Length: 462
Image 1: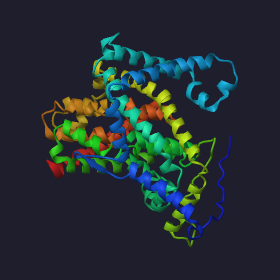
Image 2: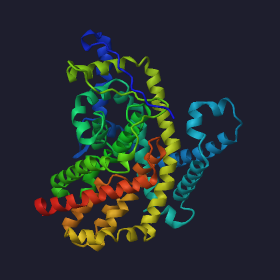
Image 3: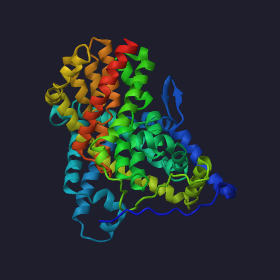
Image 4: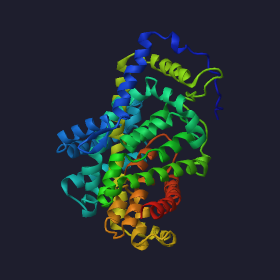
């Protein structure tokens, strides 16, 4: 087993001695990245980010064609996997790009074919109704996948602006003194949270995955960030509030979401399974991060030095674009078929079986203890969010008590782990976290945040 060694960092060039070209190489791409990922924009009363404007615009322009296009992609991913597996060892199979996308294990091939079958059934209406139903396969193919397709397209293409040109290094160094003692994380994890908060939780997970594979998060840090910082965007939070008819108190609602999320993010990394994750780094690259500021150097200057040094390592725009295109292909062919397969299965279980109802029984006395009205009717909403983030709101919309609807909405946004999207992203990634651990973290976040949500609701708002 390889032993992780910490390199002594050599003194780097100081920011005062960098050339104007080196400064611009850091400042211009980073500024564009901030505008696209981190600056909120209000359009027609809805808060989004520049990346969201691009994604929404493309989705609106080609909405009628996306289901057929993505069904074709999902089918091609399944067939391509079999074809590559059947080829003898040689130049094609040894190509790293083709190998990573298509040369996969039998389990993943099976899931790709399952996703293709579900997509074709949903698109054509052929096959079992519980697969192609508007509340199962239809949700995944017509509602979820179009959003993922366009968001991942633009996020993958533009994410190098955050990662490759020093912005993460600068912010990580500057805010490490807050992030490390509070959450036991590097400072750069704050960028993941901001990207999720302003844009999309899936963008946050994608950012975390790339940081882990690049050697900037340890196994524990990557698992913690992905499962605790991939928060729902403000835009989606407003959608949930409107669906539950509590949008008239959105400020109180989102304040409760933030408080619950912060408390869970402080506690969860300190208990198993997250606390048991190793502090080693992704083996192919090793440790690449150093946010510790040397003695006698200001935090701001050291952050700038590290950022400009990172940006100066980019030798050509072509290499950055190539990496972005590769990420798009990898996600479209590798991830979206799994979203179709596992997302549909999760929704079928949630909508057509009593599994989540049975699992919710232990929450009834807990909710009664917290004096939450209609506890028996609301209890399934505490567990069904593991299948999909929107399902608790579907259950909660029929609850009469506004206080209970308020708590259900908060819980749906603070549990974070749901298999139709975030869960599949994490299982497919190289971050060392499995299905069982995700379910445990989901339950931990539920048990931690439910009393806080109930307490704030009773004391401050109702």
